[in-house]
Image (cartoon, rainbow, N blue to C red; front, side, top):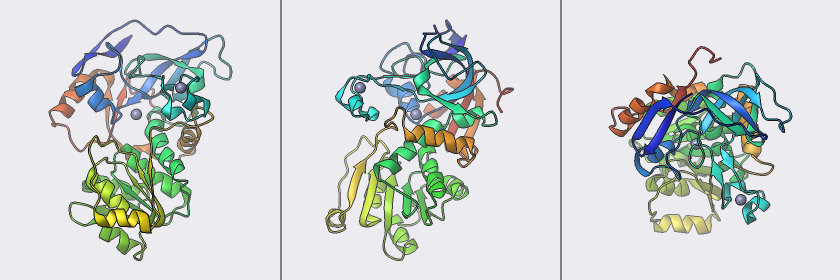
Length: 354
Ligand SMILES: [Zn+2]
Ligand SMILES: [Zn+2]
């Protein structure tokens, strides 16, 4: 089969590799769509993966073409996506059902071969069912959607919340869509990119803020009658946005940090004061898994795709055959390609994409 092989960061080649060997507890998936995760960019251009060489890619969907002999409930021809984590099941956190914190996990596309390939053998426990009329590319975006839902679960957020989302990559835009699904009446989105703010409006944002032009804290207070939101989530990992998320949250509110920053964060006196006086909860969110595995984040995101309550087409900005991947990553690296959102690759042609 054809796949993208990575031997070192930036060393990405589209080449002929052996087909995966199917184990009894796995199904063989013909990968029909696979998306670029934000984490793939540093993984494939800067740091490399945990093992090398490897086939990266972990946000995918496809058609089952073979079923291992111990697998029940799936048949050839079924459409599926899959959660990429293979938790150990034995560590303290797996025992507690908090699989995001597993201490000895495997992962399709970073520790095991992944989905930038025509075929991938996947454990049946990880599968999520797609309806016949759900596009494969939609199934391939269940991963970022599940990460957004996880942030809501971390904060026990509901339709009664007023929400502000900082940072409108794929996870941020799904966070906006999920607020709409939940029935939130005030949904504010902040970013520095007007095009993404436009998409956020289509995703359900009732108010948008370009933080290059306006102070998001002032704007959020204006949009909420001076109260601030009850739930703010930072998807950007940018310290200024993390700071704004705290300052724009009202009494008893929850602030979730999801965007990876690799940077320090200096809080102003006002922000520290506000955390204390407003009894804010500042909460971390990591990945997307819960009990029963892979978790409500995944089953709910798959349901919302199948019921067409999520619309990933709003955030898929580029569609390419898989062989274009080395060139696309070169252009990401050189910044020739900017302003992209979800980039989708098709390892088995566009024809079957329905
Ligand atoms: Zn991902
Ligand atoms: Zn574990």
